[in-house]
Amino acid sequence: MKILEVNDLNLGFRTEQGFRQALFDVSFSLTKGKTLALVGESGCGKTISAMSILRLLPKTAQIKSGEIIYNSENLINLSEKEMQKIRGAKIALIPQDPMTSLNPLYTIGNQLLEVIKIHQNLQGTEAEKKAVEALEMVQIPCAKERLKAYPHEFSGGMKQRAIIAMALACQAEVLIADELTTALDVTIQAQIMNLLSDIKSQLGTSILLITHDLALVGENADEIAVMYAGRIVEKAPSKDFFENPNHPYSKALLNSMPAKRGETLDTIQGQPPTIHQDISGCRFHPRCKYCFTPCTKSVPESFIISENHTSACFLNNK
Image 1 (cartoon, rainbow, N blue to C red):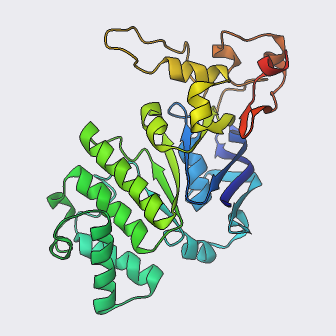
Image 2 (cartoon, rainbow, N blue to C red):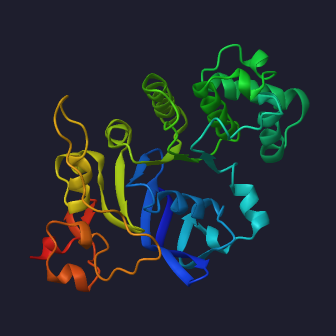
């Protein structure tokens, strides 16, 4: 069952040079109780795609066309008041930097209770009980006492757990995790990912995992969507992606992963384009070693590789 669908999303920004497009016909879906990883280099459009779902966009951003369907409703058509009932309560964001995501002037309890009061309409003892349960769910010890702590009294991993607790307190059906382990050391990264896996199993929560860390993806994602320069270039079940990557960009990403100690890493020549660069045809063609004439002239459609595995590359039509 698809709980969230993004269909043909086109988005851009108003700049001094005019409107510049950042997302091109972006489509992906999230299955209930599963994890979809949205992967790609920095600046490829992963975060802005997620912010589009939550309608948390800069003032200069503009959605030109497309749909974002959640529980049969197109979120693009909802008013801000209607979105406030969904944002945080039904679809929650776990932001990239836990160090700056909590207000240092308020206790963890104040911030957690505020979320519960707004979205759950609970007060007093009931709200506090819900807050304690949320902290216990993310395995924070002495949860009731920890409500009185300030963010600076929490480690980085504890802060991340507190933010996850805010999403769980409202029983969000969808968690958007934006590079949630970037600021954490390797041991804590593993603990946080195991925690999310447990939450998914226990509550049936769906997770959109935004990351550039393919090692993280291989261990935690059910499905993968690869994004390059504002386009989805490949979608596949996780096992298929790692065993049979199809798109040249996907292969290049996998080849740049560390394999054995001492081995020289492959690199992708060049840089991803900015929104100010107009590129005809496949947006990866200036960096692709397999580029041939059609790649420079038109945008490739998605070819079916196998069940639930598609790739937008002309090599599949040679």
